[in-house]
Image (cartoon, rainbow, N blue to C red; front, side):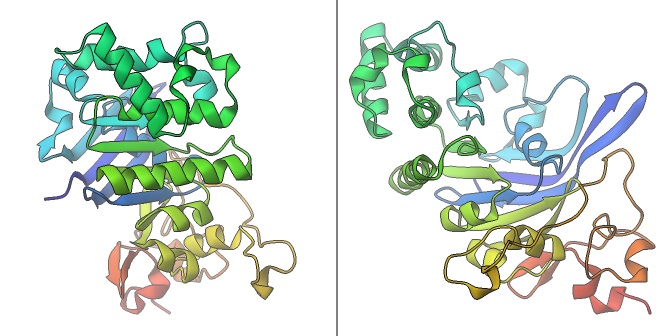
Amino acid sequence: MALLEFDDVHVTYRARGTEVPAVRGVTLAVDAGEVLGIAGESGCGKTTLTSTVLRMQPASAAVSGEVRLDGQNVLELSWGKVRALRWAQASVVFQGAMHALNPVQRIGDQLAEPILLHDPKATPRSASARVGELLEQVGLPARRAKSYPHQLSGGQKQRVMIAMALACGPRLIVADEPTTALDVMVQAQVLDVLSDLVKDLGVGMVFISHDLSVLSSTCDRIAVMYAGRIVEEGPAAQVFDHPKHPYAAALAGAFPRIGDTRFRYAPAGLPGDPPFPGDLPTGCTFHPRCPRAVDSCSTGGEPALLQVDDRRTACFLLQPEQVTA
């Protein structure tokens, strides 16, 4: 049994009397000790999907399907059980560490809070000792527990967020673009910390990013999302080096690769933006931006997510029996 399973998950926001489908029928699984990357541009549904794991979506969202963590559907749990699940079974490394940390509390007090809340045997003294261990685990000296957030660099703040996510020994960590605001050198250090923790602790991780090159070097598998659906999913190196879906190919081509003559000049871009979820185009939702689209891509329903060789792909061009002349 997988550690985390999304089974036909739909998330729809209600606003001003209209319904906006942000996630549309996603089915994915993550095993313990595995890192699943979820890629896509802003607005494709990555964060909305993973917010269902800890029930963090706003009240205006309607969620259907099943989100199973260790076999239990978290969408059916009472709020008391959801509160007990957070940090203890699954935790989040938020995108903006600068905004996620309380500026008027010391780092040590913020790290100790979830420990004292979720461990009935914890005392202030044992929590303080645990805080020191956590900081050392993510490459920071234990004395940093006395610091305030403004006394830390961006990379150090992100390490603190990782330490907080580990505080109660969860089985699953959701990392929501944890390296976006960091420079390249610090980004590499934080990625090394995350990779080592997954390897040493055997936790499962869902890593969200728009950067396919980062995901390819960090994750075991990658799922590419577009307009609320998975359009390609498979082994990380294969999805990055040999993408099958045109959108996955566009994401991979947006980042230069050292030594690859195809990227001697500026990387190729992709014109336009993802469609508004409340007004999706007919047929394949990617066809208005797709350089390989044919007339039949804009008619009928959307392409199914089917197994194609070593991965799942949703593209009419890869499913010849669905394409009409």
